[in-house]
Length: 244
Ligand SMILES: NC(=O)c1ccc[n+]([C@@H]2O[C@H](COP(=O)([O-])OP(=O)(O)OC[C@H]3O[C@@H](n4cnc5c(N)ncnc54)[C@H](OP(=O)(O)O)[C@@H]3O)[C@@H](O)[C@H]2O)c1
Image (tube, rainbow, N blue to C red; front, top):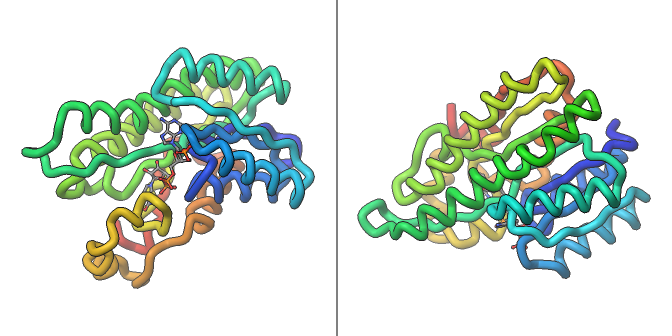
């Protein structure tokens, strides 16, 4: 049970992040939901958590790619909730293009949000965790970060980077009881994969379980790692066997 724990979830307004927020709240955690622009959706997720689970929940607009904005948001969450125990780095975007067509801004945007965003949040939460004598970080990577994918070199680089970041932070902060893990989802039904409609059949042929995953199935793995005491530096695939 996570009763009384305070969790930050980036990208918590939709998809996997919203499912993580719900799962954390269902186990009694208070939740701070960071979003990029969808205020109405983020507030709806929070309202739902307050109504269904009686936890505290608040939404915060923040571009996680912005170092100073991330710092101010973490400070505001600490002020509002009193402490921070769990950080879930889930915010992510895609700008898919074949390498010969990929613009510099496509590469930068994806790396800045997916990888630098996670760094920014870890950087600003770590001192709070150390002061609290403990903390849990779960980063959302992807099977694409483990295996690569044509048309997603920027995204794959960001998600492979997340794995290196996870393992390094895990080694650095283990002695402070700050544990850092990652999940690597496969093909999960969210707004992000809606854009891939058409390519869906070729994805399904690669999944031994023969179906796309649900956001809630990833959320369960994320929350398992957020509550684990003897697992750190691990990358847990949640992909229906795709990455075997
Ligand atoms: N879906 C999949 O099949 C799949 C597979 C492997 C890994 N993943 C990873 O799982 C994570 C969630 O994916 P999803 O499919 O749930 O995505 P999604 O439905 O597109 O939702 C993305 C979330 O990230 C937020 N966000 C985007 N840019 C941000 C920024 N700069 N600052 C703060 N928040 C930002 C969005 O906020 P707004 O709502 O305000 O825009 C939204 O809450 C991503 O890291 C993704 O790479 C997804």
